[in-house]
Image (tube, rainbow, N blue to C red; front, side, top):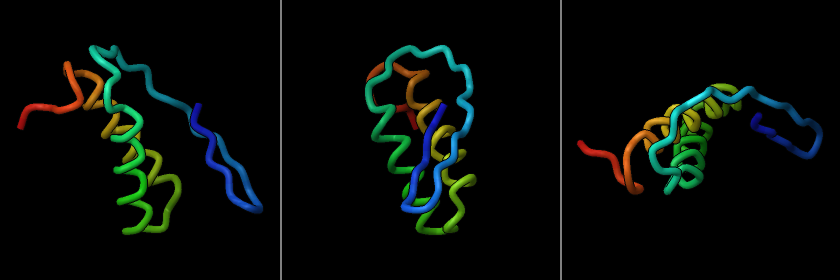
Length: 68
């Protein structure tokens, strides 16, 4: 699960089951998508989902880059 914690609050989010090919770049992908979404929306739940979706896509390809 994913734990998001702030000064006054903490919340957990379930993770999706993905068959990973290569976990390289998973954390960077999650963090980048999460932060971009959070800056845009200010919504933690949407931002966690964006991070999960991005990291899930990245880990299904070898290396840290996905084909265009």
